[in-house]
Length: 75
Image (cartoon, rainbow, N blue to C red; front, top):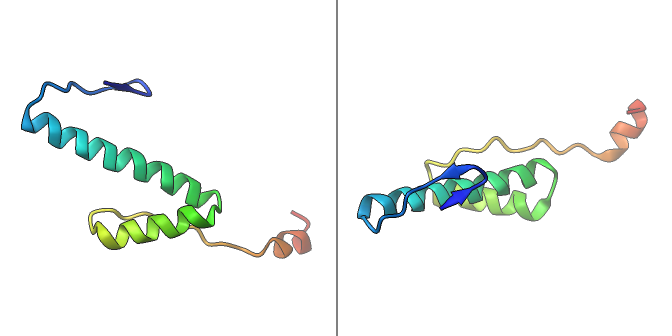
C-alpha cells in the first residue's frame, strides 16, 4: 500500500496488521489535528475526544482568538 509516498508492505502477518493499525491511527489523527489548528470546531471536538480515548495521543490544541482582536490590532 502507498499513501502519500509512504510505502507499507501488507503480507497478511500479525506484525503487518499491527503496523497498518498504527499507521492509520496516526495518519487519521494527524489530519484531524491539522484541521483543528485551522480552527475547525468539529475537528477540535474530535481530537479532544480521541485524546481522552487514547492516552498515547498528545496534540497541542490551538488557542482560539476572537477575530475582533485581529481587526483591532490591524492584522
